[in-house]
Length: 248
Image: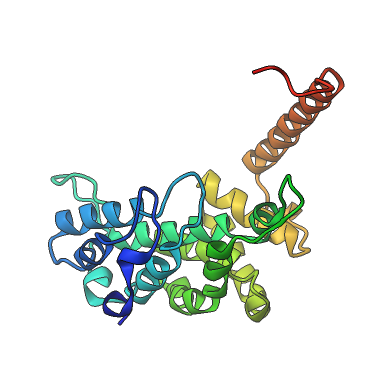
């Protein structure tokens, strides 16, 4: 099992190494929802900071993917009773983290991460490469949840699956994801979900005109306007920039 067969103490995390990760990861399977929630937050915090992929990110992702269908995780109650405080099911938290991490390691981020350094040396982001190599294994765990009866789980699984299918071995699954994307767009009002799904469909060559509502169009136009403003600011800064490094 990855929890026992990984040298966690040797893996870099946000603030050091992952010697505390085995205990926190094991706590995600605690039957007590409060303990489970705290352990989930603590474990994922170790490898989550400023969209960075760490040495420990890959192993944490593998463990997270492996427990998505664990009985304790699957038994979470998604109902919100009036007499109890709102509760965020662990399954949702894990899926959202996997999806966000996969986006942080997508092709666009990878191209930005790897490149020529100032001194001309080619920089290789080994931690991101390692995570990207795990995408088929992660996808195989996320894929069954696309059929989950809960709409929130379905949406989180879809958003996690989309960036994972950038892996060459998974590109053929996009046709299936399009069907799920259409289902989400027909029912969901979540702005974040809709934006990511629409962006993915356009990137895959699909015409999304008939799938967009008024809010989608307004959001897209606002993004185009803001991007144009940022580009104009960048051009202005370049025109008025220093010919040499400023003295500070």
